[in-house]
Image (cartoon, rainbow, N blue to C red; front, side):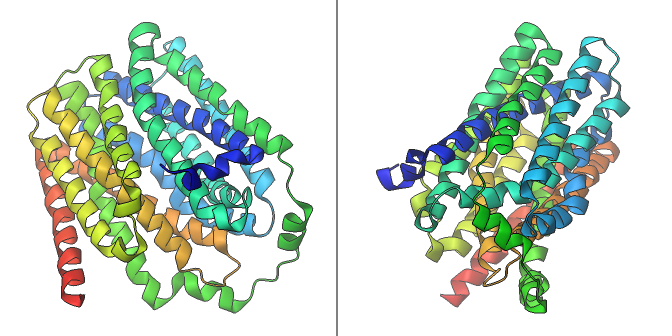
Length: 398
């Protein structure tokens, strides 16, 4: 990456935020490995295991839009402190239940749901804060550098999670995640919010014109596409624990490294982002990312062992970063002059995670009736068809 991309890191407040967010994301990936590992010991049902992904995604559908609207009205700090504290508490309680061997399927799913609520409440405000920490000309770089950090944690987190599982047990992984929230809690507690920003937002009067970009007929096409893509894409996240832990009997280190390979694929996309995510190539890049991700899902369904599973997760990571980032950017761009920036991010997250939540439970049900391989192949075909249709449509326009 060149100097201009990393220039936001020269700003001390952004650098502090980035470090705290990096540590928190690292803890989240460590917990994801541990939670799915624990669930596969509590149940062997693909449907029950897929509920872990479902409960983590479902709250975003109900809470992200209201939290985004409250953020636009100037209540970001309160939302962020409450949400981060809620997730810190849930992770700590989960660590205690696992350590004392009192954890059950219900308690694990319940605490996953609570952490999903925390994520839903914080994310629209979190993303709006991201661009407030740097001057306007640096905002694009600030977003890209932040996502670079996320993708580094996608590699390190699962690998560390597998090591912690193997050496210290799952309760230690949950403790690490609980502690990882403390940096962001301290940051938001001490964050020197410019008075002009918060005062201006408290005086905002929302007009009817501010709502039009959110749910216009033109933009409904974007929401439908996001929902369908994430519905099919959710199959990988919902079913890889069953494939890896139960069907292929991977060790804790091998299992933890699966998400590491997904993160490695995402890092490859991030380093090539200048070419892949150029504004003039958005539609082609999205179509390509759908197809690459579909290949990853197909390989996951057909994998006879660890090595092909790693290749499947790598392909998934390459496609996932591109599709999730470009969808996020498209949602930011269609707000126009609307004052409801965080609300728009809330709508995007609600649609995105509606597809993830409903897809997770649907593919879990298909896997229970048939098999995980059948469910993954079906999802791969569905997503691949969307990718080919989008690519063909863009080609005919050219």
